[in-house]
Structures are given as structure tokens and as C-alpha cells.
Amino acid sequence: MKYFFLCGLLCLNVAAISQTREVCFTIDDLPVVNYGIQEEAYLEGITAQLISHFDTYEIPAIGFLNETKLFREGGLSSFQLKLLEMWLKNGYELGNHTYSHMNYHAATFEDYTADIIKGEKESRPLIEKYGQELKYFRHPYLRVGLTKEKHDSLTQFLEQNGYEEAPVTIDNDDYLFAKAYHEALVMQDSATMSKIGKDYINYMEEKIHYFEGASQKLWNRNIKHILLLHANKLNADYLDELAAMYQKNGYDFISLKEALTDPVYQQEISRYGDWGISWVDRWALSMGKKGDFFKDDPTTPEYVKELAAQ
Image (cartoon, rainbow, N blue to C red; front, side):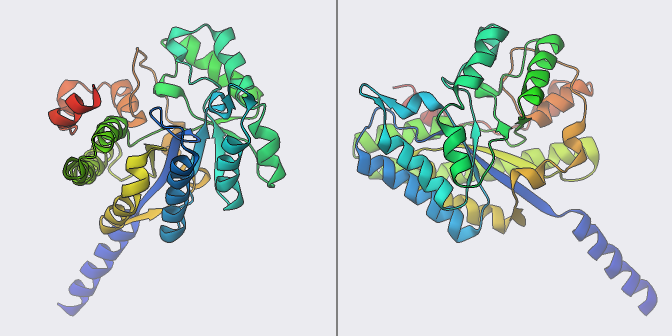
């Protein structure tokens, strides 16, 4: 009896090890999503808060930059460059998110790829100054190509220019929560800001469980996840609670390089459309999954959508 009991414990331990939960935090639209607020103290505060939370939780985050934000009417902004240097000085990676946040599905291949190259003009030498390498690319709107041909052409271009694609497995509506949060901030409605923050963390926890469940259904395991967030006031204020919630759910924080070692990122995608969706959903569609497979995907509260639309 004791033998079987010990064997049972061993099996449980092996199962626990095999189900290690890992996630990479990626932050889009650097330097800051400001919703029109240009005060330097405000923008620097958001950047400093994000970095402080990364430091506290030892999150090897990577930020994806739109270089158009580096320019003001007088030309290249030394202050915006300073915000990027705050990331680099603290050891955090930066990646290319195109110059102007261009939608590949609404652009020609020539215009889109030119926007990618334009998007590294200022950041590449800055990144190299800090002994790092510009090597990752994140598709704006998660648009990767309407057809296999357009997708493959872009993939080939990126490889030829030394980039690796940065997929997303935990997609979400943080941008809607952030816009609603901004509107409440402008109205100085602290009660609504608190409600949005609380509901945001609950929503993001539901997203974890949804994509964990989808991973189990597709591969009988939890994959190394890549989370999409944006550089906004909401995440600056609530990233500590978000990180703590991930830890409560058993997650370790890993780099993008480490996340991409998961073999799942080599899995073929064979279904294309005008989608900006998680790679988990892309793989599911490519594996023939239908509507019922996606029915439990958490939705954003209506009040958040309404407030974000203002």
C-alpha cells in the first residue's frame, strides 16, 4: 500500500512539473499610449511605474515601439528618446512595431515593409548603444496577412532583415479598459477608475483560464504563453495586481526568447482572414475547430465598452 501511495505522489509531482505555467509580458505602442495627454511628468510617470513593477516581480518584459511617437512638431523629441532609454537602462528589450502602427491588411506589401524599416531608424542605434539587439517584430492589430501568400511574403521579409515574429497567445481588450480608465481619469471619477481596475484584473484572470483551457484541448498541456499589454496608465497603475494575480495562478515570468522555445510556435497556420486574434485561436482554426470551441472566451463588460467609446 505504501509503495502505491508513494508512486501516486511521484506521478502527481511529475504531472505538476509537466504543467509548469510560464508567461512572457509584452508591451505594445511605446513610448506611451497617452490619449492626447502630453505632460512630460505624466508620461514619464507611466514609464517609471511600469519599469518599477517589472523590477519588483522580476518580469523580463519587452516593449514594442512605434517610432512616429518619437517626433514632435520640432522634429525628433529628446524627451521621447529619454523614455525609451529608461527601458534600456534598466535592461529591458525593445522591438519594432512598425513606424506608424500600420495595418498590414489595409496596406500594400511595399508600403508595409517600408514602414517596418522606417520604424528602426532611431531605435536600432539606441538599442545597440546599450549592448542589445533589435530582433523582434510585433504585427500591429495582430494582422499577419489576409492570405497565405501575403503572410509568407512578410515572414520571408522579416527573416531576411534579421527579425523574429513576436506572436501573442493571451490576447485581450486591455486597450478598451485603458480607454475607459482614461475617460474616468479625465472626469476625476475615482470610484469608476477603481471599478474598472478591479474588473480588469478579474477579466484578465478569466482570460488566463480560457487560454489554458484551449491549450489543454489542443495539445493536452499548457504552452509557454505570450501576453499582450499596452503602455498605458491603466497598466501602470494595475500591473502590480496583474503580476500578483499571475503568480497566484502559478505562473513564472519568462523572456520572449524563452517563450519562443516552445515547439508550438513552429506549428503551421493554414487559415487566414481579416483577423487580429490570438495565435491559439489561429492554430485552433487551422486545426478545424468551429464556433463552439471559442464560446467561453471572456467578454469585456458593456459599461467599459460604452465608456471607451466616448
